[in-house]
Image (cartoon, rainbow, N blue to C red):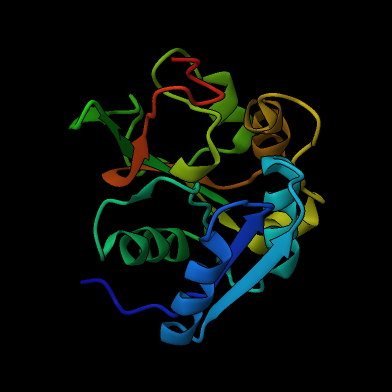
Amino acid sequence: KSENIEVDIIVVNDGSSDSSLTILNSYKKKFPNMVIIDQKNTGSAIARNNGLQTANGEYIYFVDNDDYLANDTCLSELYNVAKRDSLDILNFNHLIFKNNSLHKYSINREKNRIYTGKEYLATSQKGNITNTPWDKILKRSYLKEINFAYTSGVISDDAEALLPLFYDAQRVSFIDIFAYVYRIRPNSVMTGE
């Protein structure tokens, strides 16, 4: 059974030129636990780092601007597993939304096994590790301990962060749930479609 968890929502408005800030301010009235960081466009790495600096929760979870959580209970499920096993990093599956349909993306890992970060990296192969920030829940104290930050000015800052993120982790695991929906849009920076 999942217990209810308290969630702080930190939203970084990274220089949007549309009505995003107005929409965020209307959501802030509904969600008092929401913090809005409004900044000039600096890119995803600095936006994530600014969110990390503001966060004070036990675990950190990233959601990109046009994606969404798969259901209302997935954060509780992830938190409960991470907390129960004192994990630094918990990795999980996701869904891909493309051309109006959902497709499962399964990471091929042994479920509920506890690895060190080095073991997790050493056993990585195609299909069982991803560099995305949104398919992992991360212990904030661990991120502080390793002075973790994304590097700005590189196209794939999340790929560059993979090694430093995992390298010193003592407790890493995988759970076989689909908690996130990654939306692939035509003409995005990463897909080039």
